[in-house]
Amino acid sequence: MIDDVVALRRDLHAHPELAFEEKRTTDLIVDQLLHLGLLPQVLPGGTGVICDIGTTGRMIALRADIDALPINDLKDVAYRSRVDGVCHGCGHDAHTAILLAAAAELVRVEVPGRIRLIFQPAEESLPGGAVSVVAAGALDGVEQIFALHCDPRLETGLIGARIGPITAACDQVEVVVSGPGGHTARPHLTVDVVYAMGRLITELPGLLSRHVDPRAALSLVWGAVDAGRAVNAIPMSGRLRGTLRVFDRNAWDAAEPLVRTLVDQVMAPSGARAETTYQRGVPPVINDPTAVAVQRAAVVSALGPAALAETEQSMGGEDFAWYLDSVPGALARLGVRRPGAAPFDLHQGTFDIDEDALTVGVRYTVALARAALARTVE
Image (tube, rainbow, N blue to C red):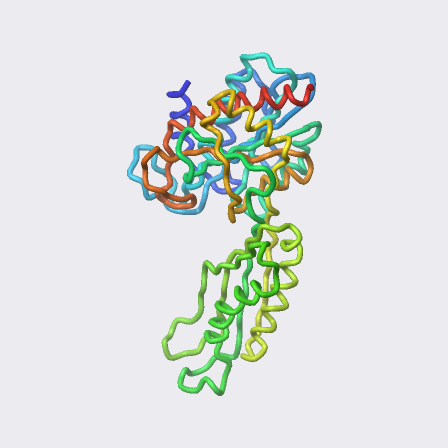
């Protein structure tokens, strides 16, 4: 099966699609599932698919995300992205190929219940495509849900599991700072927007760290700053954009009003006006202990005890959290770094996986489905 899985993953990698634009990917998934004799259903938005294996008994769900990132593919490989500015820099192509290959195996073996396959669009958007999938009823009748995510920090052959929080909450913050503008020779006669932005860049993250319990690990990092064009003109406006990430769910709930208050306080002495747009993103993924026990059992049965790895809580966001607001479940991490290779990260134009990890992912996913259904029947 490995050649087919690799070919499928490379086809997806060469044809990436952004959030809620995954038309070709959806068609490919539907064709693959129809070929297996299944009855896939395209989600109401026109992208993404749900499909059941089995017709009776209790149900668990397996989720794969299918969208790509708005970044350039910088690799020199035959399956390099053919879409300018779009790349599978997070491994969603691997997640999709693994779940499709696992489905091909699961339809051939007897399972004590039903398996719902969820191929979810728009994981890379906020608040995430999972919101629309849940609203479409994809979790109706589901007792547990599981997902797998590529992790280049882990070597191929390893599956990382963790009870409790495994990702962070993630929001987007945008602040537009404005004033009358003027000549840089006379800043005292106007409002220095760039100076005011500089204060906000440095002071807001620091102030947040003094208003929130350090154990919540709240972090605000600016990713984009834009103001002015001429070196001798104070601009009339500028814009800051960044992400706020936090481990603790309660701190996440309190973050938006705190950010708005602190922005106004930092701006007040400068005389600049600030308009804050706060986009609430995703809560932290909190793995259910019973679901993690199923994951660990599946790793040991399919790959052996040496394949089971502990994993840390990440500051990354993951909209799988929205499913866990409705049903218990767990996210695991798939090692995709070739043993001995230099460390690398997600969300890079050079991101690629050791394709031997695909077989590991398929074997684990099949064992996971069977173990989860056996557990729910007990």
